[in-house]
Length: 269
Image (tube, rainbow, N blue to C red):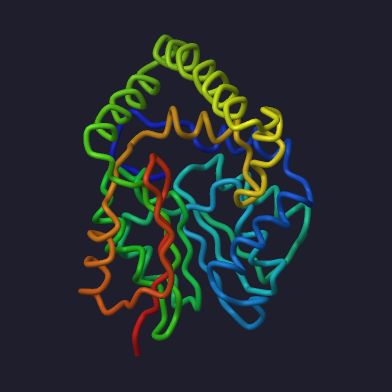
C-alpha cells in the first residue's frame, strides 16, 4: 500500500496477524499459484521483484522456487513482516533483499535494475494513484520478462459503494467497529446459507480457503473491508494500457465479482 491519502488501512498490521497462521501448507499453495500463473516448474536463475510485498509470502514462495528476490513495500510494518519471513526461512540470505520504497517514486523504480519477473498482486489499486502506479510498475521488467499483476475488478456502482465503506472503516475507531459489526456477520451468514443450499459443509469454506494462494479468509475479509485507498479497473482497460507500452498478454484470469483480475504480461523484445 502506498501514498496518496491521509486515510489508509493498516495493511501491515493485518499481515502481521496473518503470519500467526502461516504454515507449510499455505506456503505450498503460494508456490503452486506462482507456478501455474507463470507456466513454470521453478524460478531458478530468475530475478523476482515483488512490488508491495505485504506479508512477504510470495517473496518467500519465489525464493523457495529458486529465484533471487528483491522485495519492497511502502508500509513499514509490511516490510517488517517480509523481514520476519526471511529470518524464519532464509536467515542472512544475500539472495533476498528487502527495503522500504514506493512504486509512485519513479526514481526509486528506475534504480531497481531489471527483473525477469515483476510481481504486484493486489497492491497498485491501493496506492491512491492507480494509473500512475501501473505506469511505474512495469519499469523494472526486462525485455522478454514477465509482469504479473492483479487489480480489483470494476463493478460500477458496487465499486463506488465499497469505496465509501472502506473509507468509513478507515475514518476512525467508530467506523472500523461499525463496518466490522455489520459486514463480518453478513459474510459468515451469507457463506453459511450458500453452502447449506448447495449441500456443502459450511466449515469447509474456511479450511479450503488456503488453497486460494495460501491466504486466510478471515484476514482477507479485513483486508477487503478496510483496504483504502481503493481503485478499480476493467480488464480491457488494463490490457489496452500495457499493450500501448509494448506488452503482450500471456495469461488472464477474470472475476465477475468483487475480486481481482489477474494478468501476466510479457515485455516484447
